[in-house]
Length: 159
Image 1 (cartoon, rainbow, N blue to C red):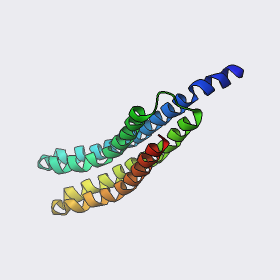
Image 2: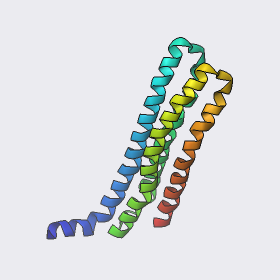
Image 3: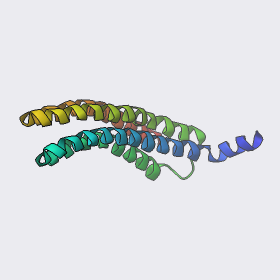
Image 4: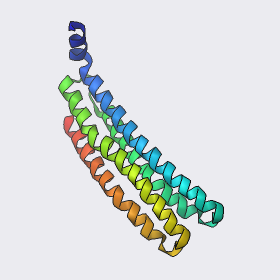
């Protein structure tokens, strides 16, 4: 037990900050993969009948990908701004700073993928209403952006 206490007193800051990076990148990335996958399946179904709608379908499919990018940016900001020597308290602060984008990014991207499937149906039946589907997807994006901003501000406040 003493060995573990020594380890965390020496490397605890780096451990917790690294765990935060892993959570931000992984969870937001998993959500984006799920959302983009759902939207891609719907786009594939649409494009086998109407291949001329590729650009619009791709636009809709790409929307759930942004949450993964937000998590990646938070991870890189932490990686490149954290000092070489971190206390366990600072490491925990970085870990907690990543939680908004990790959690909200996962669920936002996952649900945005479902909305994107509906947007593909709008594109299939009423292509002139394409932007309505994009706007519906963007409404889900709003919460990912808010989580990104909170994580970003918290990350900058740790240093």
